[in-house]
Length: 195
Image (tube, rainbow, N blue to C red; front, side, top):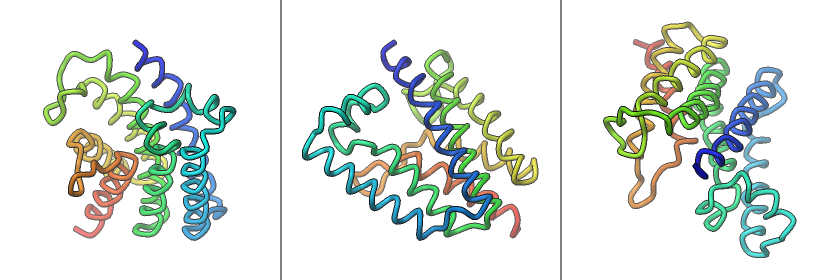
């Protein structure tokens, strides 16, 4: 129950960050180099918070940050989110980048909010439920249709949200889904266009 309460606080922020990024990208207010600077500043701030542990900042982060992330790297999810957005901005056209970010913002958030109430286990992940994935795919598809064709939006959302359950690793390190979801979504749309 405590985990569900945490996600109810976290996920609106997750959606809001995506909407802000998309709005800035669509109005040409955010370049990859500017986003890289924001990531570097955020990482430096996170390392400072981890080392100094300022009480006022921790009081703000504690209600919306997972305990493990707070200990490892405060604001880790936010930083990974920005890295995922940066990668798709560099790799893909503007419309694909925006669709990929909205798939992350809506798909991941809705799957986390609905998933805990599910009953059918995810085929690739024992801790997740298909009901959450299905709602995530629907929300992500509807959002992505604002930027790309419906067939591209649905395909990208479906594949990105299903593969998100794999918990992909690079050596011993689990790759954060804030990075994998937009990259997979963007790659799917790009492949559909070139095939």
